[in-house]
Image 1 (tube, rainbow, N blue to C red):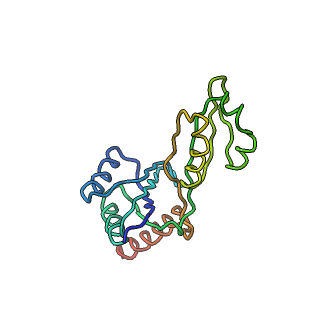
Image 2 (cartoon, rainbow, N blue to C red; image 1 turned 90 degrees about the vertical axis):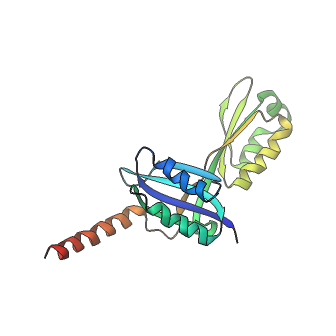
Image 3 (cartoon, rainbow, N blue to C red; image 1 turned 135 degrees about the horizontal axis):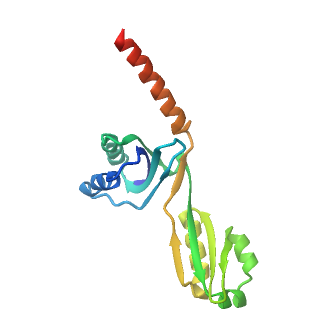
Length: 184
């Protein structure tokens, strides 16, 4: 049964890696719903956060295939209840419409939004949350002339993880001990 999974991939930052990872999805005819890349908590290591809707078996196999890439250090996959996640959304609306017909302060409080740009011709609001929350604000703003909307990709933290930095340190210690044993 298909459900939403978030795949977290820790990698070296190498040219062409995104293309090779995308090919893995393309070959399996898997659509990527959201993709975010950023530096991680470990210097020199980057983090890909990828959201897909697939069966757990397919996601498990995909994670193993990703780990076969030389630059990929580790790939984790998690269901929605195993992570803490957010998306950022920006909404552009005509300033005169929103100022005349809506109590802006009440709207901002209700949706946890804030104005980031206020100009004579338009105002840009920003909010973070889950997709359903940011979609709700779209529906509220549409009658007032929503000019533009954009949402970021998901950013997520695994609830049960000690953090990749600690896992990497543990891995290096185990390899160091193994190298010492092998050399004796």
